[in-house]
Image (cartoon, rainbow, N blue to C red):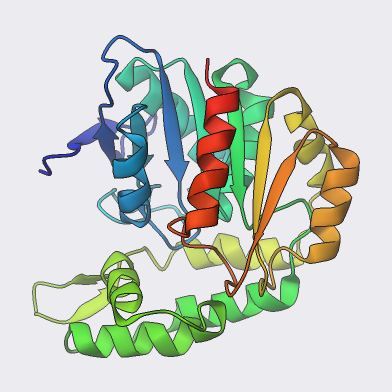
Length: 288
């Protein structure tokens, strides 16, 4: 338990026990919240600093997708799909008494937000897409899969930090020791044997590999966001969201605002001062 958030669990439609952090915010009567959705191997802890900052003004919900963090792992890897994640989100909002959300979605979380606008359009009030768009750099996806498949247990947090730094260094060339330690602790968990392993189910790799070869039309999903305010963040060094794709997104949605974050690859950490300013302005404009 944290002084800043409540730990919560709820049950999915198919019986999985799923975890979320609930930062209550100042208005206990509001039925709106910021909903932070993480990347494919990530979890709610990635949003800790951002959620604490935003919770001075808004309620903030940070779930762990099934198979990540403290949420239960699914025995059927075919359930690790955006459609299932959206259904899990639907149940979370019902449990929390929330009817409108402003989604901040990193990578996969942004993709889930695009599906939400079709599956539950009345719930989506605005979106921040963190380094994700309707065209995804496949070369970089392959590198992510190779990282996900490395299941080597590590001996201590120093070894975890060194391993994470080596894997992600191109995306954070000026990262501090504190940055790398935080990323490491948000990426790995300690086993009962005292070793450290990834804090996600290896079963998610099956669906992720399918995404590498699938020809999914994401532009219609992106265009469906045209009815809500959208802010897109791009790491200047990103191999997932290119500058050209961001330009085409702006052409397709002139009302969209965007920010390219210098010295960041995939994805920005959401702690950079320009990013915080952009998110503040976006939520101030979109909140209702």
